[in-house]
Amino acid sequence: MIDPYIKLAKNTVETYIKTGKIITSPDNLPQEMYTRRAGVFVSIHKRDGSLRGCIGTFKPTKKNIAQEIMTNAIAAAAHDPRFPPVTEKELPNLVFSVDILSKPQLVANRQSLDPKKYGIIIQTKDGRRALLLPNLEGVDTVAQQISICRQKAWIPEDEPITIYHFTVERHGKK
Image 1 (cartoon, rainbow, N blue to C red):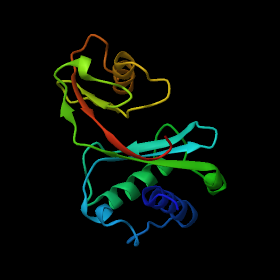
Image 2 (cartoon, rainbow, N blue to C red):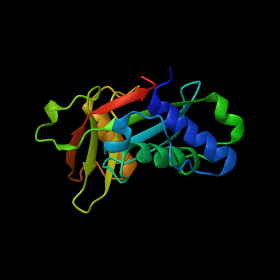
Image 3 (cartoon, one colour):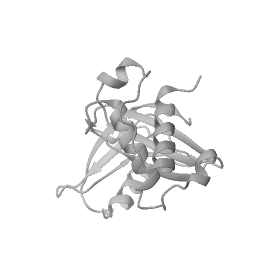
């Protein structure tokens, strides 16, 4: 049986790419998907493992997880600025994952971080920020996590940052 979080992301993208329409009221989902609110990231990979799109929110922006998944799935497929929109021809060769984020917590001590367990959000005083999900292939140290986040947000190495960590409930690609 396919994971309902993955099924919703996949069906949303397939419907949107094939018809231009957005699923309005998905049914037969676990109750928590209608009642729980959280930040959600939807990642799309090709079967070879390469990234094809990834968009998400670190705090809830919709009324429930189902709507977060649908919004972010379409954004990952059609609006990730790093990639052209997914085409109908690509659909059979895509693999989806959905990460449900815990509420970010301020990090008082970098030694408490673990890139396999925690994702991080870094932020500058002027509000620039970047996020990196946990347990990503090739990211083995906290220094690598922070460096990648700095690069994503164009934050120089010497600029002070505030760090938050979060955990994820991962559905799909491990």
